Image (cartoon, rainbow, N blue to C red; front, side, top):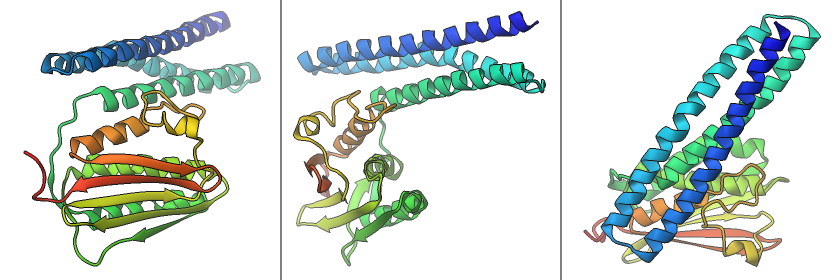
Length: 271
């Protein structure tokens, strides 16, 4: 019986490794597709990328879902036994489940970045978006001993935004900032408006980014964080571009980092 349990656990662990290899293959295919798009920016190349993302979703999600389900069932069976040997197996299986969850996270990040983005924009006061996002984020910042401040103009700042996607894009910047400030610090979100555009600044007092890494922060799969997918910032840039905006970054090691997003005001968006 014990040998049967261990054999099944080995199969599932092997399946998890197989899923990891599938993700690595997906990354290679995606890089090749990106090079194809760089050479030919026509509609056909973009459609091919869309089909690629959809195909990868099915190829990876289906076996990974089966793996996760079997891991859950096996964990429940092992938990029924109250002896040290089964507890040891359960601990090992828990490690495998964590790896499977990590792979699912990689897949979700890939699909979010590579999949088709369809905006549902509406005229929105940018100040409201920032205020709501900060209220949502405050508990996480407080746990990390990070003080979050905002600087908002007195008058409305109207932009055509898909609130859900734009909040997710900003949230990526805020999460990265808090994670960088491991000893605490300050995070400032500043909104301003000129004649024809709005700007959002996300400024932290963290350790900053080296010049070498600064040039790569928007590259897919580049990450300095252990376990990071390297797709958060590329996704943020893509969302900003879909809103016909721009994003840039400045950083000084030892002093902090500043991301600047510029967006057209409502009524100035190009059709």
